[in-house]
Image 1 (spheres, rainbow, N blue to C red):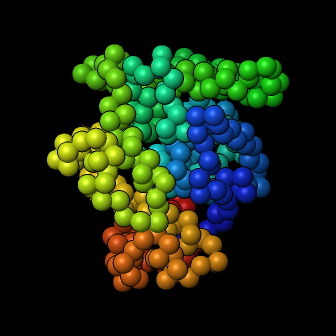
Image 2: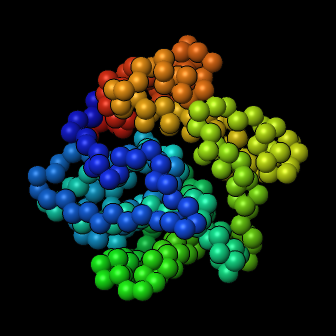
Amino acid sequence: MNQKNIVLPENLRRFSHGLDSLNPFLLYHGIRTKDDTGYIGDIHLDPQLFIIISGEVDFYLDDVLLRGGRGDVFISNFWEPHAFRKTTEKLEFLSVTFSLFAIGEASPFSDFDWLSFLKQAPAKRKTAFAAEEKESILALTRKILFLDAVRPEGYRSMIWFAIHEMMFHINSKYISSAGGRGKVREELKISPALELIHLNPNREISLDEAASACSMSRSAFCLAFKSIMGETFSHFAMKKRIGCACMLLRSPKHSIKEISDMCGFVNVTHFYHTFRKFRNCTPAEFAAEKFFYGPES
């Protein structure tokens, strides 16, 4: 953890973007010049598309380094640390943060697995598009930017449709023939449990509480969650609480003891033990380094 020159733009510093069905996305059109050489990144509830319009980047998803250029798309998962730096003189990009709970929720959209790409491991969450497909992504990106600049009546609805079109294009590459497009989204089964985690970052959510929220037995819920998310509910929920702690550790406002209490740990010893298990460092070491990625390469 010896990274340097990492800054967070004020409008991306938020712990949660406050997205919901009425405000389901947030756009950030960025341009980096030759003077911008450090990593920029954050961690937050809602997934995020990072689309490269021009230039090239090094992009971290958690501790996995990916590289990309014009027309490439990276997707950070919910509560997944991510950061980037440009490797060319100039970089232009669009980040699209979208509500985990609102994507595809409209009735006509419910027959498609909108979160298929998010179920891939970080190393696989850079799109593997041919040149023609990249141009399609860039065309949708230009459409989104145009609508956001001109803002005709109904422009937010049109942008939301364009985001779905982009997600459909991306996810179609990652849905197996066994999964199929006609399949009702499996993640709907466990969305109440995911929302419980979202609404309660300050305490442990028991398996029984999560299963009850999903109207499932404990054993059925465990099987469904592991099948859909690729990890156990307990591991996933703790990982998100550690993500909450990471954000709080960046601020000088709270002591480690206070953060331990705020994130619902039994005591500081429990907090240290769990934090080291997930982040491979202590909370104090993490706070001293100011960020959470591997070294610059």
